[in-house]
Amino acid sequence: MVYKTGSEPMIVYLNGEFLPKAKAVISVDDRGFLFGDGIYEVVRSYHGRLFELDTHVRRMQNGLQSLRITIPDDFNLADIAHELLEQNNLQNAEATIYCQITRGIAPSRTHAFPVPPLAPTIYVAASPFTPLTEKRKTGVAAITTPDQRWSRCDLKTIGLLANCLAKQQAFESGAVEAIFVRDGVALEGSSSNLFVVKEGIVITNPKTNYILPGITRQVVLDLCRGLGIATKEDTVFLELLFTADEVFVTHTTGEVMPVTKLDAREISSGAPGPITGKLQAAFTENVKNIS
Image (tube, rainbow, N blue to C red):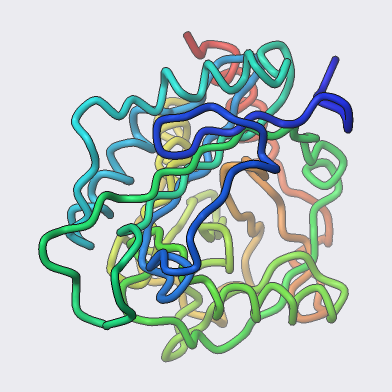
């Protein structure tokens, strides 16, 4: 695989232009910088094939609508993503597409939305990605932490300070993920959705304003139904995690990731379970069918 090097600068997209990343400049008056006022998405590219792009775009559009950010009608993430993959020699590699849209550059720093509406700042980048293959085989450790986020976790906004603090807490504890707990309910990870397997049933929290409607989460639920694995969208109380047969998390970069240790305690046998393995295999087959 050939990637951009120091002599070949990475090309990104910013407000209608493809340009070297080093020359992509965003104003200090941008509301994304000042207020975290924006939405983002991360899409996996498997050798030039974009996974669940339409679903990602629908979620992004819902977030933009909720934040009342309007983007140009001719903005086409698919076209931009494919162009970036080509320009960065990533069309035959594993990669991620990052898209961030903010409200734009404000004439003054005021909390209320500027009138008339601003032209949004739109940034898209393609980056090489190394699959987390070994971690998916062995499983990872996680910790639990109180949920200190705001109450609109269903929107994929760029204001991620609470998530960053939780992830750092996990890393400092020798783990790779932190599970948010609110009122005794284990909701989701700092960058993932949470699943529990108990007596052959795959359980995950129902979609509410306190969890992100994960793209991989829905893919896994669909795969369960195709495999004849029983599912239940029900409240996952914290104590269930420690008596579960299997625990795993899902996200764009980790796909189906087993959690084998939680708060330094082994989950069941301490190894990835059979249902998690079936879902990993089914997910891999599903990826092969991307058009």
